Length: 298
Image (cartoon, rainbow, N blue to C red; front, side, top):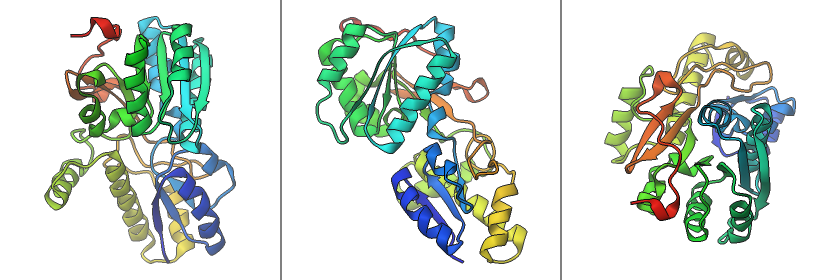
């Protein structure tokens, strides 16, 4: 048996076809586009929330509490960012928030000023970016240059990474984003994982590392439950396991292998520090909103 733990939706989509033919279980430790679990695969299991729900808390909970009624959604034209953007749009519809701009930009874009000009002209309450770290940084810099003054900025991946504030300095403040895990949450084994990772790599883990470790926890539990390494019994165990890991929430999947037990976090940069602001059970601080206009920041 060769169980796999893989990252990235595009990689997972490609490899899933191989693991299905081979009858090998795969824990997708870094892939979250829900399309993966809509194809009838029998051996692919999610580790954290699907991409379509990355912005759910921001749109469904935070925005209505702040009285925000309009949103601009911009996103990179690749699978994962498109999935987060589509999810954001669906949650906006559910929350009765009008999407005034919904546009994609090319992968690895180095200039998104034309899209941001349309965002500025639409003057939305929220700017939501389906992005990775490089384009999240790019959008923030060009939003400042162009005077895009949304009351809330949120990005799907970049905002949760330490490199975001290292790249932007004070301009990272007020930005929100989803995070699948944070270093100091109280989950089983998290403190030990964090300490061991730091000792081995001389740096802090990010949530991608924690997701990989969580997948290992789940795989270990499945192997111990089965008492062997035969693929089909392990697949069956992965379907029915319900257990805590270092990630918030629980490992629990539906009949298609899609994760349903994980609890995504929402973080915000405040004074150069990243704080969990939702859900309340994990919160380290309160929200700082609305985001001040660029020309009024200290």
